[in-house]
Image 1 (cartoon, rainbow, N blue to C red):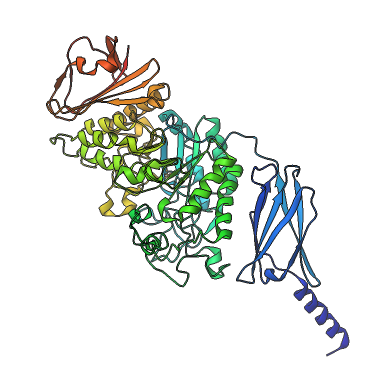
Image 2 (tube, one colour; image 1 turned 120 degrees about the vertical axis):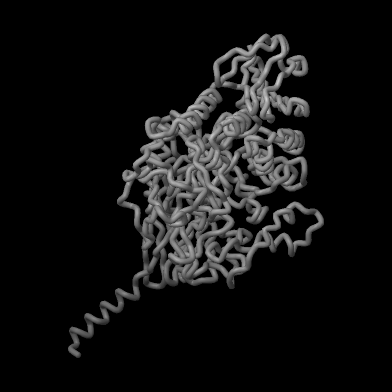
Length: 614
């Protein structure tokens, strides 16, 4: 070999060994002026754990460097003082003679609308993005997962652009907040074993799934939602990740996951968490087990993972200006982590709201999970719980068989246990969602049940949630598989022959259902009594099979009357004197008619009155 060639090869070799590899740095940017001065930066690259770290930026100090069990990670903790101004922090990584500079932008705090929280004055409209509307066919296929609308468990192609195109529809319907099932990246396990359309196996906590759009598209969608006076609720999952998450091939620490050696199923025994008699082994069997092999269980007791997840939620709030979070499988994660997370978000955004999915058909454990609970001695800091107990009772109160008398006492008895809750305004109430059989049944040809149930959900205490397609009578049974609960919204795809986003594309029955819900939702925005007023209810009358309750806020009074029987019933107003007072009539907000309350009045079989008292 000639000397010149040897020198050239040695020079090339020296270049190859002098470079420091960094493939990821999360978060990619942060903000000056955050209330919490600490920032964790996760750095990933081959042998990055051997590097030293240097930077010089006014008001920003190196607090701690953690070398992980894997040599390919560094966890850098910075302290950002109040005096630190927006700019670029150039971080130098040094290993011997090798150097690399990575820039971390420190942005100014967001000034746009957002982080508003949601409350009992809102109505959440839950959308599964893959099934609502396809606004951009160019992003349909990614990660070798094909579109197949004939297959209930495959990707169908709905995306953020499709939601964007139908914001006028949502605004006109009357919803005030949009809750999207998870929008972050979900790579497949394999076409045979796992379908990723639902979004609950996240493989990158900082990236919107490319089949739905981009981070910027998500941010712009939220900006446009805010311009219409609506809010955005983001679905987050910190109990587990997807098995194709980028870190799964090289985990940072030996305890990054629970049961890191492989799948061990959770027992799903959620009562152990608040059971004062339960051994810790049974609590851990619930919280540390995996849901399925494709969803590894995260160990939030690892403080670096806990910091990573807490920061991730704050990053999305500040970057995208989301207004609330729905947290999936809330009780399955570590309790202390959850309490710390909720508190950290509240400290940064005092008006923000997090609702935790706590699936108990019992009021006591639901109340136990709520912030400032009077039923336990542990502080969860969780503002809102999901009332699965009331949802379950609605199934009996509003039976599918039109000939069957509704057992309205079931919902009365659930509400009679409200003394357990610390905050009645912050309870999410609903008839169904993406995990439950749809409330509407395909064989229904009569809307009495539909109208009664929605009248109740939209006038009782708490924060109502409506599942997409309810307004056009979409149906689907859990027994047929989850894909059947998550049907495409007709008209959301260019090739659809029916467009239910328009009145002309709906059947007469669908228009009746849509218009009824629309009237309720638009009225609800204007009435202070149902937006957080006191609830006063009367024991259901066994003779008339009726349930009567009122919402009261100052001079605003709404009297709701539900008839559970199939027969017309006559009611005497004297029984409800505490509510009616001097009012002589009430205007039914659906029909617009005035119902006299000076004498006995009638209500049709399976009928509902929502009366604004005059």
